[in-house]
Length: 361
Ligand code: ADP
Ligand code: GN1
Ligand code: MG
Image (tube, rainbow, N blue to C red; front, side, top):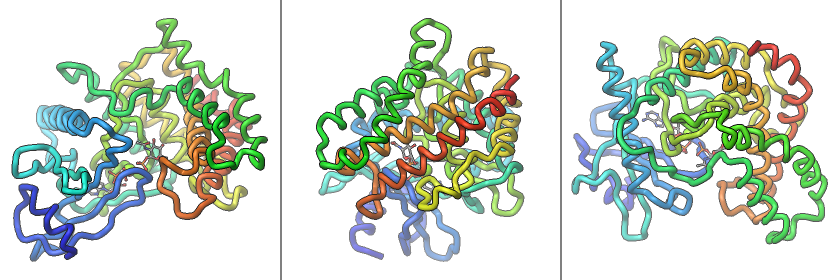
């Protein structure tokens, strides 16, 4: 095992001798690793380097995660659920009792139990969408009565379309990476839709759309399924759990789970919105969320799919114009490729919007 990992892993209250640390997942922000212990063939822990340039209040972030996981654990216990260690994430504290470790280079690390016998997907069919919908509906339902102070907004204004547009317009003005000339047409396309996309913020100001505890990163690969039975085990990636509009969580799942192509597909012909996946996800979600949703929230879920796809187009494009300062990239044009792919998905959602809207009537 690399010397660097030996020291880091050593800081946490783990059991057994750690034998190896291997890369895990393909997130755009943090770095994740699976950690193996002697005599066991499945990983025992997940080690993550927290991107503290993005999550500036690591203490607040980790406290949020502790509160959220403790609250969910209590709910599962009171329901008499079996096998709870596979149904909710559990943080492993550092030996000094803190929920993270800061190394000599200023990197922040945290550790979780590895959820045994689990798998995640980047693409799913309607059957999996239905159970994922139930899982995210239940996630919101369980967190509705979390006691104490409001959760920390780990990234202020994270899904606020108005402030996202402010940042986008600033990046167009700055043109820091000198990339604007070739891609001006995309600026025009996004500006054309900007006013419509700020609807949620307007409804909130008018007192018509509430904020609830949301996951705020409901990518399809943030749900873990049982390797053998396919049942949902656990919702992961809890960095952004904070107050928001439920249409955001609904929309981000559709953006990732109902795309027939991939988020950065080079071949735009692969990309479209899969109506069966949306329908199945909505069915599962409403089964667990209908009891607390207002009619106006339900009426705006499909808008959420359009909004989150638009928002992600704006976010990738902003990063491209800024010179790739936020998302990890695999090649210099990656953020542009992602922008085009998300825009294609947006167009597909727009084309099928009338049909999609009938699903919530
Ligand atoms: P990122 O922010 O980089 O997306 P995640 O927390 O989502 O990081 O982790 C990346 C992937 O690792 C997830 O999609 C999931 O497949 C897997 N994973 C994360 N946490 C666990 C865990 N505790 N047990 C098993 N697998 C996990
Ligand atoms: C990031 O960390 P990851 O890859 O799950 C991002 C999400 C974006 C997503 C796009 C903190 O999520 O908001 O929707 O990439 N997370 C943050 O794939 O910005
Ligand atoms: Mg993730």
